Image (cartoon, rainbow, N blue to C red; front, side, top):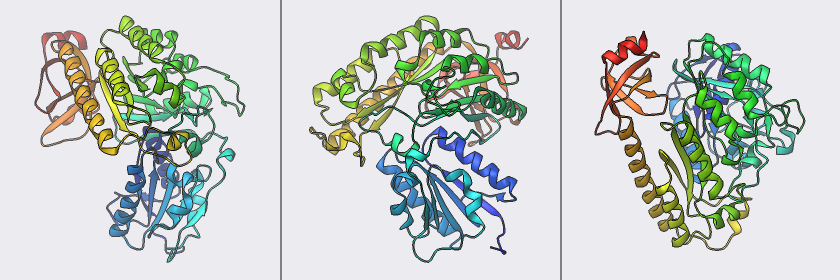
Length: 448
């Protein structure tokens, strides 16, 4: 491609891990001379990093291919990510797609671009068997100057009956502690104030660290070392399985220099019967024990929960078990997912299918509960002086930030505050669900 103008655009679907990997791919292309442009701008290469957790993510992939073709009909479209690994041939048939790279190939994108031509028929597929994806590529994302997503682990050895992620990402494997610390130091050198640890199953950190299945280190080892990295103000744990969140890790966070009081712990169901059908590795008693331990040592911690509605066999009675369990639990917010059948999963063949309309109704009930929980938590924080990390976006003259314990706040936009941590008094909950802040004498003392 001698006339290649070396411009590339990127779009990421799905999780924080995907954002970390897209950013790494983008740095590879930038280092090779590709200028980064916006996804709706004219580019020579469009990279779409896909997710396949829900059916909606599959449809979104097709929509963004159309977006790329609208921006530049002659642009090359490359699809990577989980959907690309699970259904490469299907994606190659999408009009406009030129190249599909599976889990093993996505970080070798440069080796495929030089000879790539715009396809008139179906795209070219390079995709391995998932068993071949047994190596680790370190990644971190830098979207703005405020926060970075740092990948520490990939893949999963769990066999949850609804999940395709092991089929898309392979076995559990980890970055070395040395490389994680090196990446964290690189992030700190860019004056980024917050790191979010990401992976598929980060509590399983240490497995596959040196190409074997043993745990050379543990998650506790990892966070103990990261807590010593100079220049990082905050480290946030993105999502961790309740059975892998140990008391020692909770206690370390409670006395940490940099880890913030915020946990996101997948539950999926408040019914022990359904947890067994899902092949989760805990029951509700263990889950409530984890939440109560956090509350014991960090009363003001934010606790987020993943939950699935409409799983096969979820009767009205079992759904209400989930609703009541969450209602009584001292948590902060929910991420609610509506179950959708996925190919090659055990759950897709299970009896007790819940009608789609009922799934949507239950989703709405839990989202309303989530909002009530969040507002109740915010209410407990009013009047406190807390550190706020301000983000860069100027939205109609307002700027937004988060406290350490994940209260979203706003104030009038001030460019001097971008990427700065300010101690501010939380004043009142506003109509948009954020919290207003004000300076105070306490603020002056806290800074001093």
